[in-house]
Length: 300
Image (cartoon, rainbow, N blue to C red; front, top):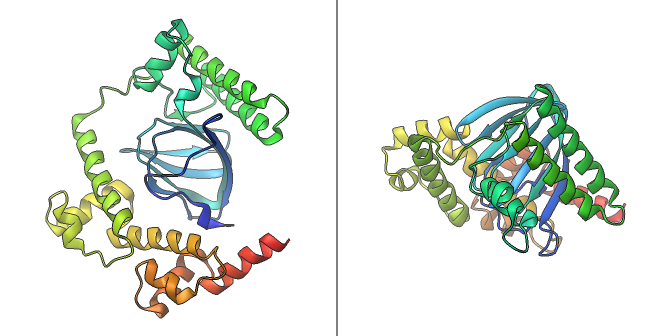
């Protein structure tokens, strides 16, 4: 499995393009692996579990997602997940800009369906399960979207939009829409704090990062900060920093001309032996073995 494809926190990449602003992804992970490290993006996302179980976090909510169930993530929501149980998991992800559904002119569809979704006044349930019946219809539509994106038959773009419209209309008609605009002020404050810290890590991962400077961003004492960070991400600050650095290193290793020692330094490790040890723990192989696998995939 190519773990280097995991998205960085506050993604800057565009999902799809300006003509079709959506991205589709299929992933498979082993038992206990971090499926999605804590991050957020402006686009909305459907996560559909194909096999196994995944422990999912959206903002401050945690829930177990089983095969045949889905998660909806509003744009801007922090989310993370890891494989649960002994089986591992596989999933399909659809990341899309809700502007994809906007009307060219202000009309009833825009006013009654799309704006409430964008403003989180009438959005999808976070955890979509087979029951009640209305939820099962949503899952069927997600499965249909997945099939369209996999086949990419001529005109599939229209089919994907059509399924999304049907999902929003069905959710609204069945009274299953959720109002998340008026969320807890306490939760919103926690999420804003976490975003501040994680953005700082993203911008400064190539340099030494001290616990004290992260705690000062909030501000909190170091002890309070460690408890806060772990309660929000289920990782210690150092575990998170290492995971982020290794993801960046894995991306750099895609360039066969870059020396592993240079990659280590740019990823924030001035000790090559420590870098190799941390990389092996995270990726189940050494940096040189990881690069070799990438080259074999390209040549296959």
